[in-house]
Amino acid sequence: MKNFFVPVMSVLALTLAAGSAHAQSSSDRPLTLVVPFPAGSTTDNVARKMAEYMRAKTGGTVLVDNKAGADGNIAAQFVLRQPADGHTLFVTGNSVHGANANLYKQLPFDPIKDFESIGGVMTIPMVLTVKPDFPASNVSQFVAEAKKRTKPLFYATGNNSTRGASELFKLRYNFPADHIPYKGSPQVVADLLGGQFDFAFIDANTVRPFLQDGRLKGLTITSEKRLASLPNIPTVAEEMPGFSFGAWVGVVVRQDTPAAVRTRLASLVDGYAKDAATVEYMTSINGATMPMSTRELTSFIAAETKTWAEIVRAANIEKK
Image (cartoon, rainbow, N blue to C red; front, side, top):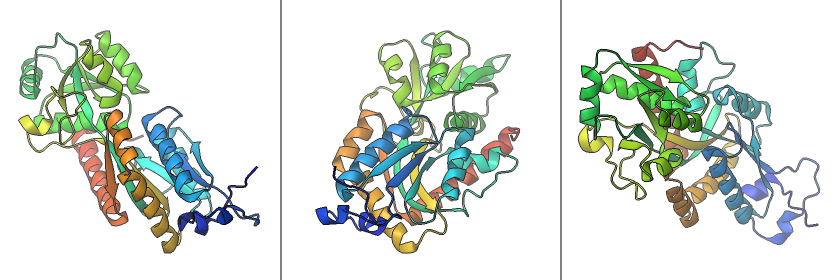
């Protein structure tokens, strides 16, 4: 069998010659993409597509390793225990690099200081979703209905991204609502169908079938543009400019990874984000590519962390 374990510098230099795929050193290891969510999640699926792209470009072995739990903190700590040689990439997002520094009283690592940005990958919008009989057809009507009720609405969330969108929406439009936490978005959809609460922000990929068949109603979407698969759902900005929030995926590595290695990894990730097949795939799951340079992703993470600080403080969310 052909040996695909290649030296990391050969991988990162995108050496496609067959001869580079035969390594003898015991230090040679594959690239590993560490995912902080279970297999089958959107982030996992995106990471596996990225692994396929990297294998094709490098001729080397690229693995996906799922380290789910603790809002991504387990995966983050695992990455920080690996050698800083560019073999281990962290496929991160809102939780570790945005929310957790504000949702946890104390973390055993620093999400900003302990990692270096590699590049952005994708963003996934969320849909403000209600039952078909909810007395509102747009954001303005929804907010008016929420404010006139004598008791707060109830909303559910399945992850940090949907919690952030919900809390930020409440803050920006100043209406009362009480939170019901769930372990994941599929459970949120099931109980919203059963009328267990009033509304939820749900990622477009998960909720799309229920919107298309009329079992649920989408009032607005957090993307900058309307989705081709859900063309009748307006963006928040169309009715109430100034609101922007979405789940996202990016790639980082340990802070002390050599600069030359980070540069070559950034080229790989950027190539994946801009590849035509990637664009087509992201569209098929109701997301969008989010190519970002290392500097842009660093600034973006700082902004996300600041936004989460605002949400936690204003919403008086108790830290874990």
